[in-house]
Image 1 (cartoon, rainbow, N blue to C red):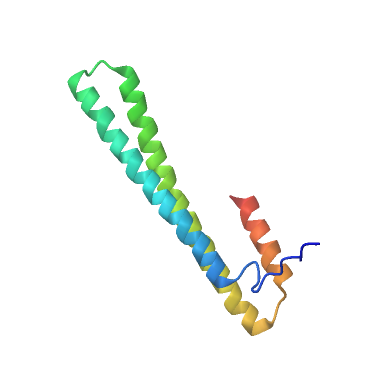
Image 2: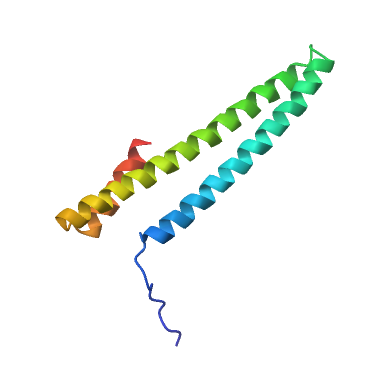
Length: 111
């Protein structure tokens, strides 16, 4: 019978959260770079043919994607700051990890 896996650290360990936050930020940065590259491509198409409405709409979509990826980076950084401030408060008041989970749940509902 297989042995049940036990985490050595908590689910909301600072290192684990930072690792996931970094991965999300890296992915969003790559998405933004690709979206801006695609925007430049469609802009060249519009420069050659100003009547190309499909290329114009694709330009707008690329800019929306680039802005969304930037907004996601800001959201992740905001969550990291909030969690860090909560941990500082937790060390002072000795609150339980259940409060951290409920706080994260409330943050996810607000977004």
